[in-house]
Amino acid sequence: MTENNPLISIIIVTYNSAKVIVQCIDSIIKNSGDIKYEILVVDNGSTDDTNQLIDKTYGSIVRLFSGHGNIGFAGGNNLGMNKAKGKYFFLINPDTIMHIHCLQSLVKYATKNPLTGIIAPKLLNTDGSTQHSTFKFPNITQAFYGFFEKLTHINSTQNGRYSLLDYDKERDVEHILGAAMFVQKSFWEDVGGMDVNYKLYFEETDWCYKAHKNNWTLRYIPSAILTHIGAHSTKASPITNSITYAQSQAKFYKKHYGSFTYILLKAITILGVNYWLMRSSYSLIKGKITFTIYKKLIISYVQIIIA
Image 1 (tube, rainbow, N blue to C red):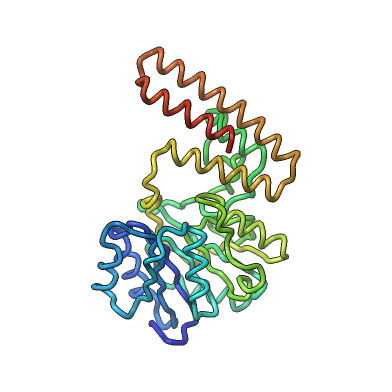
Image 2 (tube, rainbow, N blue to C red):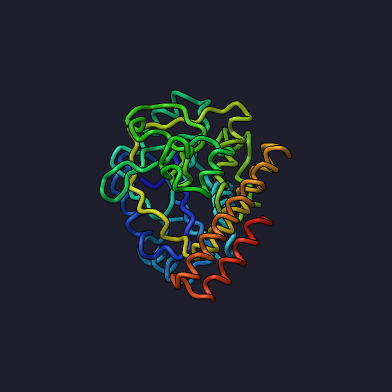
C-alpha cells in the first residue's frame, strides 16, 4: 500500500517507457501485499507519452519527477534516492514485472542482514527461464572474450557469469544487474550514489565495486522474483552501443584497476578491433555489407580504440 511514511521507496527511471510502465506499476500495486511503499518515477526526457500516461493512470499514487532532461541511468537513480522517504530503496527498470511476495522476501532478508548493502532478486525471462542477474567483476579475460566471442559462449563462467545452476540458492555475489537492486538506505548514506560520469553501462558495476571496497556484502536471494523483459529503452544502434560500452569499460578499468591493467585492456582492444576490421573488410569484399556501412564500422573502430 502507498504511504506517506513508506518502508520501501520503489524507484523507476524511465525513458520512452510508455509501452511497459503501466504493466510494471500495476504489478507493484497488485503484488505488494501489506508492505508500505512509495513509487517514484524519474523520467529522463521521454518523447513519447510516458509522463502523461503515468499522470492519467495513477495520479498522486506515483511521485513523478520530470523536466530535467536525460541525466542518465546513474543520475536518474541518484535523483530518486535523494527524494526517497523509505528505509529501503528498490531500484527497478520500467520493463520489470513484480511477482507476489517479492517485497516481503527482500525486506525479510534485509532486516536480518543490515550489513548487506544491495540485494539481488531473481530475474526471469518472459518465457519463465532464469536470466543472468549477478556477475563477477570485469577482468582482462572477459575483455578478451568480448572481442573474440566465438572462443566462448556469452553466458559462460569464463565470461563473468555465474552458472545458471547457482540461481536456485542464496549466495554472495560480486556485482548485480541494474535492472533490479534492493538497497539499504544506510548503505547509500555510507558510500553515496552512482558515478554519473558513466554515460551508459558499468554504473551499477562501479557502485557494487565501491560497496565491496567499503566492506558491504552483496547477496542474491531466489525467493524474490521479477520478470525482466529487457533492453526496451536502449534504442541506440549496435555501433553506438559498442562505442559507449568501450568508453565505460575503459573508464572503469582506469578508475579501479590501475595503469598496468588499463594498458593491457587497451592492447586487447587494439587486437580485437583489428580482428573485427579484417572481418568487416572480408564482408565488404564478398558483398555482404555496403561501403556506407563499412565506413561507419571503421569510424566506430577508431572511436573504440581511443575510448
